[in-house]
Image (cartoon, rainbow, N blue to C red; front, side):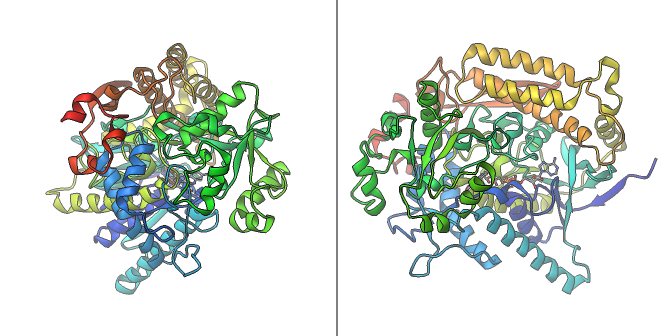
Length: 625
Ligand code: FAD
């Protein structure tokens, strides 16, 4: 048996997307010896795929914008279930984080007078998304990586070693956190290429592992979104909140089948694109909910005037928050007014000149031309909802990113609370930077204040190793194939806990998940640990199953419709439910969900809203109080 590879750091950051890199930069700047671990190649995190932009109330395009308006939009988008302190910090700090990115080397698109340009997006009252064409995530990751390299150069100048304070371990999967008396002591995992095990000893871990989309069949998410961080946190004893809220982005590709789910950015609608059904009707005017009636145009003429004169007209309903648009598309298709391949039409070709489309949406043009042989400068796109983002995640302290487990922090999509029941487009990239920075600082302060470093015991490490190799010896009960199990899981989540939910179907989903869990105990993989994707999937499935159970159990309990949780059997929003969070914890490998009270919104923040608006969301006694 080769000796276990071991490393020791002060702060471990699991994930090299926007949240992970920003956390790592902060920890290193606090003087911590910091490691970044990532499952994919460095630079290939999910963040790279972000297209539309990063939301920050800089007021460059409309000077009426400010943090208070951004805060209001975020709370409305999340239907007031957001952790208000996170929404406040986010709205206040996002502009500084965008400007800071330019000091790292990012270059955003510009207005004519040289300021950072900002575009319209669903649910944002003013043009607010700083962007780089439709490749904003790439620029974000590129500049964060550039900052990492520049810090490493500083370290080399001082110590002679580039990696003395900040080191990246890529293509490395963490399978378990190691605890010492309930405190974080390190993380255990394997090199994806060799299968060799490694122990990282560190008193603080920042989870920045992204989302859970690979548990659903139709998704915009990439292979690494298997809910690992959510599951690592649960198994370590932390709690997850808001897991019933899964965002289905309204516009994913629907054709050809091999690319079903791939995202069509909301910028297409922000830049003038409209949705039509098979009768050619711009149907979104029929789907403006009561709570948004005063903000959205109810006729085409006003909606079209808004692009040139937003001050005197209401917004087009294509720019309603994502949950509203996704449900509307779903209803049109169900009513038989969908496109040939089960979507609707998104048309920008009749709305903007071809050169303008090529300038503003180059990736979309390329994506449709290459994958579907559709020229978006001349033809409409066929689009439909796709699982995109999880609002639920690790319950954290808003200011520091600390979970309830000492030494465990979380930031980015893996954390919960910030977006309430529905995230606004563009609010994720800003969330990554605001809370990545805060979690990096929180972890550093925690380490500085520790009287002694926790220890990774041999027993805990041996247990993590036994769990990781279990799929090689699982044939006793029949030998389940991980690929079959994964397909069945994705189908069940898509069909039974998808965009529109009902009690009977979620009951069925929970039974299916129990059965899949039983079968997963007998998963078997062939061969050995080198280059073994079947084994990787078997380990990922352990995470996807527990996280899917959280989604299904919480969704069954929440008997209302709100944001990314739509119940056919409870179609209305219920003010009493707004006061409750559903909190998932693990007890003897079973998910338990408990109701806990939502923290009441601070009064000065409530005062930012008209009383008439609060009446739509709050209970009578909250309004009086
Ligand atoms: P990620 O960027 O996904 O990084 C996760 C990291 O964790 C990766 O490095 C991964 O390898 C690593 N990891 C995961 N599990 C493990 C493990 N077990 N061990 C080691 N490493 C692990 N949001 C916006 O605000 N604006 C947009 O325009 C926008 N466009 C989008 C377009 C698309 C197509 C998609 C899919 C999403 C878009 N989003 C957008 C959402 C946004 O991109 C994501 O929410 C965000 O990038 C998540 O960042 P993160 O840092 O939390 O995670």
